[in-house]
Amino acid sequence: MSTALDADAVPRIMPMFRLQWEEAQGCHVLLYPEGMVRLNGPAGEILKRCDGTRTVAQIIDDLCVWFPGVESLPDDVYTFLRVAHENQWIKPRSA
View 1: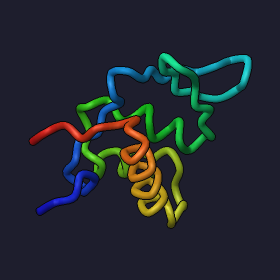
View 2: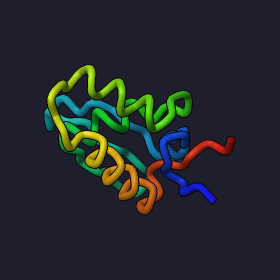
View 3: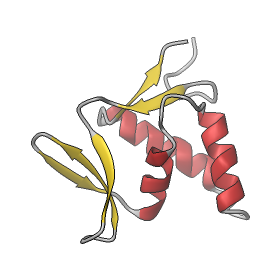
């Protein structure tokens, strides 16, 4: 049984959340009816790519192009996606 966040998973932001750049705060935020989550730079870059069309592996590959030389990048992406999934910010698309 594969986990929800393996390399072939295709994550997307849950419909009740909206990712947007918040100019006043200089960061991406995740808006929902009861509030807002302020994201750091890496979290915003990962969630920008959680559009329901790319696999986790493709997200990591894309980020490796934009941020070369970051050896911990794959582990960092998996860690963040696990947290995002536990917080129900994202959901993997069914295969």
